[in-house]
Amino acid sequence: MTAEIKPIHQNGMVDVQNVRKIYRRDSQEITVLNGIDAQVAEGGFFALMGPSGSGKTTLLNLIAGIDRPTSGKVFVAGTDVSQLSEGRLAGWRSVNIGFIFQFYNLIPVLTATENVQLPLLLTRLSKKERRERALMALNIVGLTDRADHYPRQLSGGQEQRVAIARAIVTDPKVLVADEPTGDLDSKSAHEILDLFDALNNDLKKTIVMVTHDPRAAARAKICRHLDKGVMIDSEERELKDGVR
Amino acid sequence: MKFLPLILKHLRHSWIRTTSTILAIVACIFLFCTLQTILVAIDWGLHINNSTRLVVRNGVSLMYYVPITYKEKIRTIPGVKRVSTFNWLLGFFGSDTNPDWTKFFPNHAVDSEEYLAMYPEYILSAAEKQAFLEDRRGCIVGPDTAKKYNWKIGDIFQLRSQIFPEAGPFEFVIEGIYKVDNALYPGTHSGMMLFHYKYLDDAVHGNAQANTLVVEIENPARAGDIAKAIDQMFENSDRPTHTETENAFRAGFISMAGNLTLLLRTIGMAVIFTILLATANTMSMAVRERRKEIAILKTLGFGSGLVMALILIEALFLGASGGALGILLGQMTIKALPNFPMIGDALRQYPNPGLSLAVGAAGIGMAMLMGLAAGFVPALTAYRSRITDMLRTI
Ligand SMILES: Nc1ncnc2c1ncn2[C@@H]1O[C@H](COP(=O)(O)OP(=O)(O)OP(=O)(O)O)[C@@H](O)[C@H]1O
Ligand SMILES: [Mg+2]
Image (cartoon, helix red, strand yellow):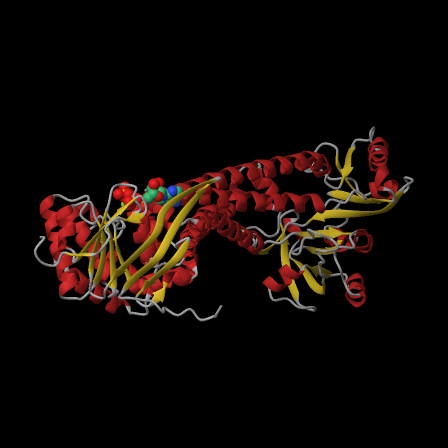
């Protein structure tokens, strides 16, 4: 046993190694993830599909560092997330991860810019810098004109774009999205996916996205399927060209 | 504090809840301050009672005098230790036609030697006491009065008398400024002026008589017997007396007030406790509604401690503003209390009207505690809850 934990096998930006996640409820054990291996290269766009209850959100949460595996390793951006304490994990998330939820999860009492500024409250930026950065992020998602609107004054697609602005405002390396288009009509979904493409291609964000929607998955460079806690694709299928 | 806008926005967003919570705390602190002040005043009233002293007054009314000859007669009753006259001068500054009552302080003519012996609470040095007793025009004043008029020993002042308007003005020389020791003799009046009965009696050509006679007895347990003996002695005279322990009114008041304070305290505590519960409940409802937000903040990287602190600060803010308003309201009410019937009578003689620093501080402390108590459970819940569980149950 060495005190130092080296990411010896780390491959790419996200490297999930033989991860198991077991929930214990009373005396019952539920194995939600049963030996998962997955890699996402830097600048990759990874889509995760699978039936409801297959463990997609669970895996995503492990990658985002809001949960820890029962066994196995999760390397993200060079850090073994599974080894960090809860307190360190919070700080790590604020710098490295942008999280996008299905239901946007904006804070209703805050305006768009204020929502986007939230993660910046944890940095040392001045008030002015925070606002500037937030406006920059809103500019990227094309919502500068809605900066001072409250979430209830925005459409679903707009809310999700604000949420994306919030996810990218700290300039994290990895974006993690759980069914980001699940609650949107197809036009808005299309716009959001275009945005993901742009973030991936232009800003070189590594994206891990859970989705039920084949059209969303088709945007990704890699798509894998999860079922009953195991990856069912034997090999990674490159979707870059052709299949779309 | 860059998180402040976040907190304020929440308070503003749910302004109905914010206002009602603050109002509840205001009511609570207001109640506490006012009750506590009244209780302290009543307590004070009870403490200055001394049952080794009796007061003899005219049987008909305080408006009539007691013949001065009664003094010697009472002295013969077994168990009586000392007797002193106690007369009002109702002396005032200003002229007869234009008295200045705003500068009034109680001034009494007493048989100085006996009276000082009976009232050890007016503490004088041996030298002061001797100088006072030797000076016909001498008087002693309380520290508050001396301070108010910037008097020192040897100063001379004049008063005219409401009771003997034709006899004034009376000139007095300050021979002593008595000290009070509230630990030893709680509730001692610190603004009294005492002078020699002889001086008054001479000035009115032997017609001063006695407003009341104070009688010191050997054994407080015999207060009732002796009071009865005194009254029986003059029963068949043309000026019967009425004798009671120094403020028998208060003596009767003690048992009643004892129950009253208990009752007030109990009601007060019950109300405060109820409001506390209600506040805690509102707070935890507020936080339950915000489970989602707590999960979001934590996901974004806000540490558990920070999220907990934000909730506590919000609760503390409610507590502090409620407390401040409550104290303000209490202060105003307490200032106005002496003008109310009944309560006013009990409070008017209390020398320190207004909200005391101690009660005020206790009030603020209590408000903050209420805020903390109300915010504690929700904050702890937020601290402990796991993001994944919260996201799942949204
Ligand atoms: N905290 C928990 N305690 C017990 N069981 C849990 C817990 N979290 C998740 N599970 C179980 O793990 C399994 C996988 O859940 P998960 O949310 O990862 O599924 P999912 O693939 O995201 O499904 P969906 O497509 O419906 O979102 C489910 O059966 C769920 O009940
Ligand atoms: Mg899910």
